[in-house]
Image (cartoon, rainbow, N blue to C red; front, top):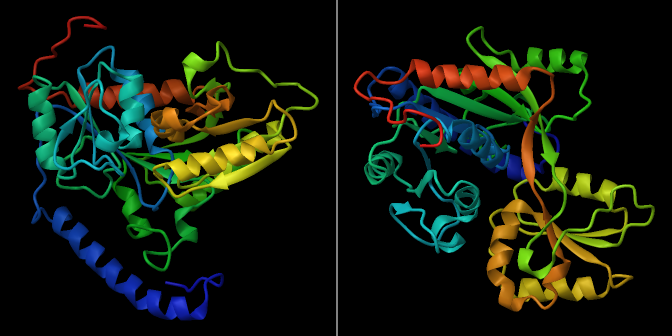
Length: 376
């Protein structure tokens, strides 16, 4: 392990031995699973895990949403997450009327988009999966969100996400760096998805990147980027439609508000559209309070024209929407939806076929397919 030059010596002196100790514990734990000393619980339906090795955002929620959209018309789908940032405890099944305090912001966002999918939060994944399967009356398949390290549940497909801007070979184990596990644990993945790539990444750069990641023959690798959609109102009832500033020579000044792990792609995209901007960053999964809303609106009132706007992320929008009573100018608040897009032509179809093939192949013999046609 090498020491990073961009960290102060005092921190490195403390973090380096802790990182070695942490790495030793993680290696032993993984070996116990590999040797079948620590047992994995199998379920009578295919399980797909989406996760990462790096602490922070790599695009797990957009990937889970993509998979939910891929499967929801053919299978009875369950989604299980720990529900990070929620104030509730134990097993919670998503239901109408629940907010981010109970579900967490990411699960609340997912449930809002897929109300017919069975969505639940539970820190204990084994108990949570059993409870989710029971509450759904028997699942056809399940998606495990942020579960690469949660090995007590057996999975049929392990999808590992790697941020293009934070490659594994450039990082160190916690607390010296941001790796949850040693880099070599990437080989547990069946599918590797490199996220947040430039849309114009060249075939040569992809080959060089693939060489660095060094996938094994059984591992499929895909290069993806984020696709940001048109502006949408945070409070739909307050405005009939969102303005379109594409091609406008002098767009208004905007306040960019985010509480996500890595806001740089969001900010970079919006700054290209709105050169006159002010950035306000909050911690990941931040719960906006009255004083935060007041400060944002104070800055909004100081914009050069009355057409100034607040633009936030989709994940932040679900929490800000719950603070509607505190917002005096709701028609000025917008968010940008985000989705996965595959860089290479044909990769979407290849990815879909591969993942669907995994699920079809791993349907358990003791589970009959419960749906005779899509949409049932």
